[in-house]
Image 1: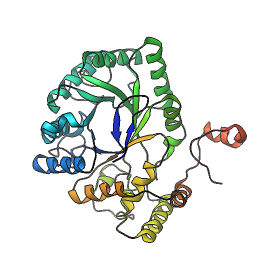
Image 2: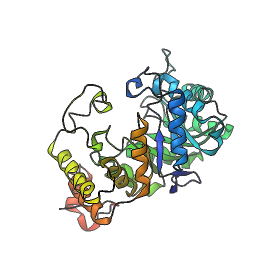
Image 3: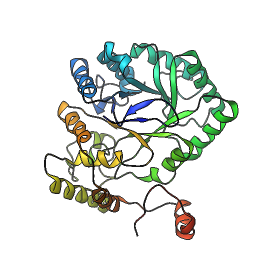
Length: 345
């Protein structure tokens, strides 16, 4: 499988990674998204490794800590051959310091994640969200100390705004601290706002993108055309209604056409994943699956790529309206406008 460097670093990640949110006992804040564990988790990890995946992503809050434990157990002696990422920010207890990005919480959270993962180091330690109550200087100094201690190899952020990422990078440069090399962001055919500022910021400043929800909680698998079953991740995350609009139906129609034209077992999920693989600034796309069947279908996306004509057809169908100020820059300063993403009139 293709490997790509994450940002301006020497960390090489497989273009598809595995997201472990579904590893749990069905407990905790995200427990309803899956309950894969034990032998089932070990089998999925082995399937990923056998297909060339070297990157596994989790978070302390997934399954109330169980996702990290299950991943650590599933990796076992294979741990040294892969890259493990986890995250901290969300509430993990009732205390005032059991949430956020303070020095107090981050150092405690890192130690707890190391214990649960059963490892001596975390390859990529990510802050899961922006903390508006803790100075970024404090957060970045704590992360720098974790890197210098050997507990963490690289750091990244998730769900930041572009200005928050840019400011963090400026602080790291000013104070000669280790800087974020990756940003984990939502991006898919039906969620393209990252193209306005987040991805251009990452490209310009050397921060690679790791993509979560590449199939829009399963919507882009083509299995959910407005119907509800009551127990899908799409419904649990409150997204089914959000995607019930003409633009999203146009996206599915464009993907339908590619699947029908290609044949040979190509699926809607594989089309959506391969589109992301082709996007500027993207380092790794996180696959998520409750079942082996879903995982194998997603992994099959590694065997082929979209043509330029196919990319253009779904680019057009999925294009979104720009928002201020990018919309104004494009509308009134088009001859000086620069973006890594093509616009269609």
